[in-house]
Image (tube, rainbow, N blue to C red; front, top):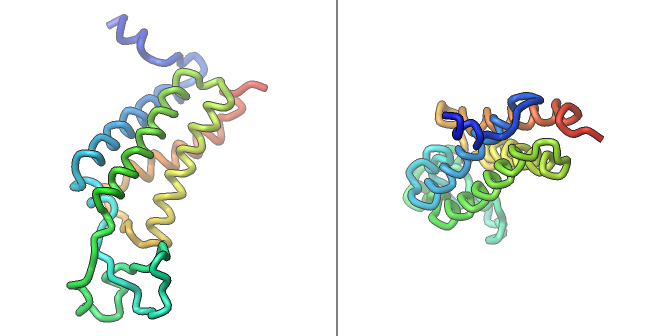
Length: 170
């Protein structure tokens, strides 16, 4: 048991390093899942999308699709597409591995201002991503399966922002 404790990050100043380690392991596990299957990703990013009714839509626009429920006529449903593609899942998986690795390093060097800021930015980016997918792009409709990603992103952002001066000494 003593050897297990030797693997944990130092936590003399608080438990933030343990939190960073837990969310990094969860992130890496989620990333592996994204690389292997679309099943769980589709539970987060839900729904079918259809082309926008506007004939002026730029084919390279990031908002050229709209949720089926927002479509003017549900007869368009046969043309609906699932935005959770293997490519999207792999991209999300690689980003999530990167965020997890940054957080692992940050857990063990929580007093390093650069690593602390990078960890904070991984949380802020995740919070911004989930918020924009919910409010702007409408690919996320809140449910129980969204609790952990949202809680980790927002609580990590808030906790790290509030505790910056405690962990990073000038």
